[in-house]
Structure formats: C-alpha cells, structure tokens
Amino acid sequence: MTSAFCAPGRNLPAFLSASSLRQIKQFGAWQSPQNVCALRQKLRNAAFRQQSCSTRSVQQKHQRELIVRAHVEGLDESISDYDVLTQKVEALAAEVMELLDGTSLYLVGMMGSGKSTVGKIVASALKYPYLDCDTLIEKMAGCTVAEIFADEGEESFRDLESQVLHELMPFKAVVVSTGGGAVTRKQNWGYMQHGVVVWLTGPPELLSRRALRDGTQSRPLLSESSAGSEEGGDDEYAATVAKLRDILDKRRHMYEHADLHIPLEVSPTDPGDCGATPAVIAYRLLKALSERLKNDAAEREAAKEFEITDSGPLPPTMRQMDAVQNNGAQGNSA
Image 1 (tube, helix red, strand yellow):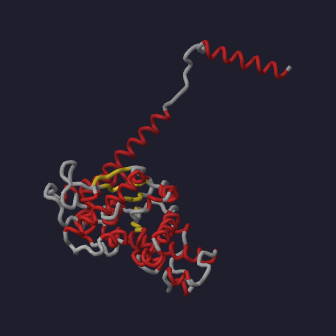
Image 2: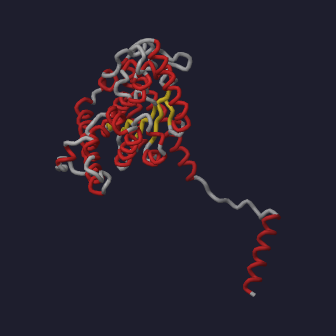
Image 3: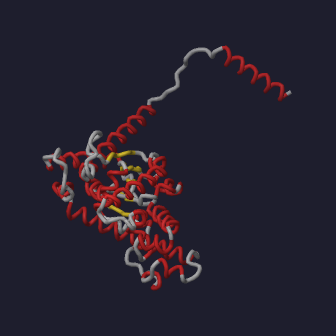
C-alpha cells in the first residue's frame, strides 16, 4: 500500500509546509503543475501518517472490550450487556473481513450523522486504518474547514474534497469518513465506487439535536443558519432543523445511491432524543454489510452454474429469419 504513495518523512517545499491555502494562492499560479504536485504530495503524506497512526492504534488497543466500551457512554437502556454487543460486533467483523477481501468502506451522510465516530468503531473492529476527509483537507490546506469556507468559499472546499477522494482511491482496506457534501459531485462517486458506500441516515430533527449537542462552530453551513439565534434555545433548534431539512431534501436522491442505508433512530417507532449510540449503529452497519456481501457471493455462485442446453428445434419465426439471412448472403456473393 505504501508503494503507491510518497514515503513518509520526505521533505516538502518550505513555503508549502508552512503555508495555508490563502498563502499558497498568493504565489500566483497556485494550480500550476508544480504546486499541484506539491499539494498532492502533502496530502499523500498526511494520509499516510493518519493511516499509520490508525494502524498503530488498532494494534495497541484491539482488545475485546475496547471495540465497544470506548464508545458506550449513554448507550440506550435496551442494551444492558455490553459484553454481548462486543462479542456480536467481533463475530460480525471477522465474518465481514473475509467477505470484504480488502475492499474499503466510505461513510456518507449529513452533518450530525456520526460518520467519524462510527467510522472509528468499524475500523477498529475490522482492523482497518481509519481516514477522515475533513482532517486530511485541513492538513493539506493548513487551515480549518470553517476558515476555508469563510475565506475561499464552498466551491474551493469542494475542489479540495474531490482531490482528497481522488488521492484516497488507491487505498485498500481502509474506512473513510467523507464530508456531508461529498455526494454532490459525480466525480466523487467515481472515486468511491472502488469501495462500499454506506449512508448513515436520519430525520432532520434527530440530526439537528446531534449537531447542536456537538456544537456548530466547526460546521460552516450550520453556523450561518444559527447566527443571531439564542444559543441553546428553541430558535437555534428550529433554524437548524429548517437548514438541515433543506439540505437533506436537495441531497437525498444522491445519498440514495449508496450501497447500504443504515438508520440512526433507536428503532423504527422511536427515534430517541439523539438516536441510537455509535456502537449500536456500527453493529447495524456490520450486520447489513455481512448480509449484502453474502447475497452478492451467492449471486456470483449461481451465475457460475449457468449452462446452455439444447431445447429442441428453433421456433418457426427464428427458422424464417435464418433462411432470409442465408439467402441474403448468397445474393451478395453472386
């Protein structure tokens, strides 16, 4: 895997390693081949470091209780035995690893869907390195996502996001958390189709409560909508719900292209205040992935059994067509 990317530790140009996206653009032709190559190398190095750290973390912490217990704070009361859930996660992960055969996972979904937290749990269970697109963008640009939105605009951020996904495409056996808007560009689907795309889906009300609980400062699209609203009040919640509903309505048909759809609600009849916990969602993801991979494998096996058999003489219409074709061939040869 490392052969496809720059070796760690290779020195970058001094201006690039110490600059932000704004400073890079001040050099003039920041999209020149030289600067594009430098940006690409910086991204690859950052991805390699993030992947290496994730691998070391898995090797050091992959003990039975850590897969779930590290993320069970506030687990809903219906799950009373964490050891049982852990064992189920481990059993599913072992099954899925063999079926995946190194195929990567891409998590997509709205802000507040828990892609990063769930991604880390799933990566730990599968012993896959974990990569976060937003983190890689910030390392490449030298500034935060919020700063990129404020200073360069959303389109510049989407350009960087597409570049990150393109560079991650050759990675095998990794779990990648994408930004909420990654699905809005067709080229990104082309990059993600090399893996299994998983949509973490929930209603706007649930996503709003989760997003407000975690804070909107790092979410540019939400911080704009909540500006002027009383922090933590009903106005802020209503504004957030309206904003997320609008975004989700525009993106829903794009998210639906994902291979798997994993619900965030506690149950079909009970969404819960903040939905199911990350550990439960990770279990649902692995279970759905296992079922999908088994079905795909069964279909491939069934296709191998296809054989052509002699079903007797051709129907009259087919014999007439064959005669016409033969007559036409004889006429041409004459």
